[in-house]
Length: 168
Image (cartoon, rainbow, N blue to C red):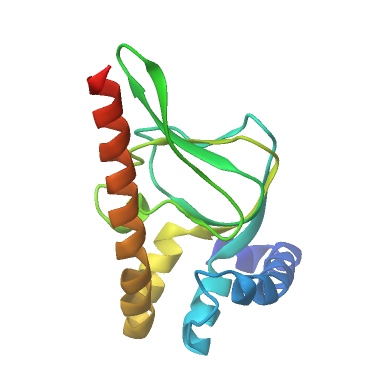
């Protein structure tokens, strides 16, 4: 028996939260033009998340279990280096996608992510999304088409920061 099936109130709250997330997801640049079936898949896997300034959303090496669509605030991506400590790679804000390591095994974060300001986001459960992608191939294709440019950009930003670091 599923966990939520035993607690009807918890299941109802989850459904209400998902229903509230629909308009917000449709407003985010990452999901704005998604087909309806894809948005439904996102809603089923989503929850509103708030982070306070200074909170870590995740640490490098942690399991990549959630990715975020940022609606308000700023989040910094960085990596710990032996000589420099935390090296900031990029700061992301409203309208940005945060996290892509959830889509590729072994599903571990490659960077630290921390809130530079208070942050409001929608968190999407990675295992739920991976299951939805198996059921709805259109969702999988749309995600990949939108994630690959993000991955490419983040790799370029990382390379640039590392070149700056070693040029010192």
